[in-house]
Length: 367
Image 1 (cartoon, rainbow, N blue to C red):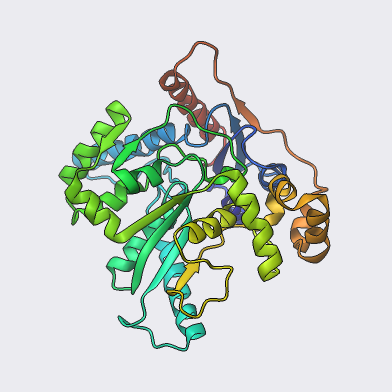
Image 2 (cartoon, rainbow, N blue to C red; image 1 turned 180 degrees about the horizontal axis):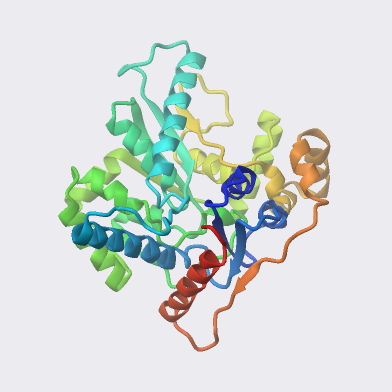
């Protein structure tokens, strides 16, 4: 949504955006954040399938563009192109690079609260609700730059490939994606794990390329004990069910007077399961920070399941953002739909979707 509004408000005839969301797997509020924007430079698309089924078509488009530019440069020395495509999810390295700032800012705030000087004597663990692992990658890059972070802790929902990889070394894609109340982290293959492996292996791009080729071919990667030990020295994880998440939303509200969205609640529950017990007042607790990743206003269904109708009403009256309230009554623009044709494989559907994206971009005039 932030990118949609940025493009719409830029008034730049050479800048357009095609944004995709999985049909039925985001909240009505999240959908309205995109479909209430009426701009010729914005195309909103809903697609059948899981949350990361569009990753392959987009990755292929970006890779093909890089190859064309390289061939053009080699043949003529000209590096210009009629069109430049760029992704804004965390498969674009620019996003985790910017997210690194959150870790430095958070670390310094924790030091302030503890009355301690920043440095090697003050180590802070950080717990993050984890889907595509963009924030985990950003945190690991910050740690490699010297930020005194201890463990980066992943809180996952039942779509738990990250948890299984950290605990067992088995980075295996699940056969199906499970629907959860923390839908924004419903991920089957987190694309930033490749980057984490790259840094973990000391920038051994040949080894990581070999691993990811195996993953692309078989949907399974087994990390050997040497690299798994290294992974576990830097990362830990916990798998959180919807029931645990809802229980924590209640406990945070009652214990801290704070409304959390379902994804932040996953991180709170993970911190609890990993022994940090963030809701308790414990002076002996190891310094830990929990990343809150969204506003509860986006997730009425999940908040209502956890806190009840009265809890949602209390949130609406006490903490619902004014700008979000204005959005609710706005008219929506019907999104474009990518259908999953009956009998088609995922690969066939993704090939079709890639063509759809190209057609949409071509329709945007000056872009």
